[in-house]
Image (cartoon, rainbow, N blue to C red; front, side):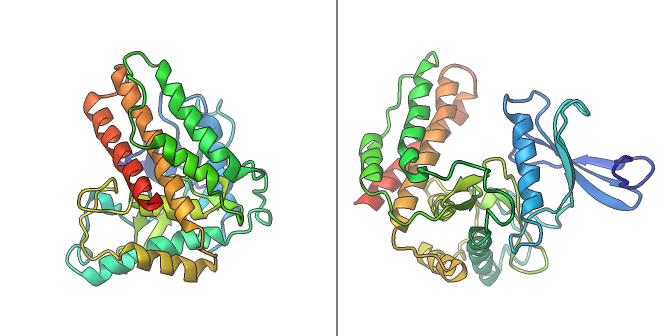
Length: 324
């Protein structure tokens, strides 16, 4: 921070920020300015440093766009400085709705309704970012994106069989869903920046009005068709008994209204949205099954593995319903 002229003196009032991520978030103050530090977990994963570099790069690239996000202050790409790559960003005055709703959100259905529509607005804004113009043309592999999806996620599922104790994927319709996706690939794929993990637990809501304050947790950001972000949002939409995120808000809009809001805000053709919705269920379900496999091998808590396996089954059943 001294080298980047970011204030002088001690770092004051350091506070860990709790959340659903394994990454470390630390809020502190220096010379009258507040910062949030983000770095990988103490026990880094193999790709942790590269993930931090990508996150910082994307936050820098979308500065000045309509996408609500934490503003990047500075990034350190060299892991030798602190043992891991890290970056500093502006703190966001907002709350995670999945951890509880403050007033007036908790009791005002109109606030809940607008909160839900603001989710569509955020990914519509991201879909409008010109990834080439902002310098993200090489963020991911654009060619053949749709053609690669089923094979990529099926290979990940098959890889779990190497874990001891895992009985193999006992998942309803997984082959049928994969075959349907391959047979119905959309012709009009439009590549752009895709958050990759967009749902209520990965955003912060404003306190002063019913709107989204910032999209956070950009770990899975890549190039792809941003319609998959909408598919992911719909697949995880809070419901009473489905695989959606846990959120007590009966005033949320229905799927059709969220879709209409996204279409109006993004200007995108939504004629092939069902394919992206099915892919979102397939992709997320196969990712979550990995925790169940690791739990069978004793590498994750059994109750968590069982819970996520149930989510996977529910997601695949959702996909089968969409297929008809």
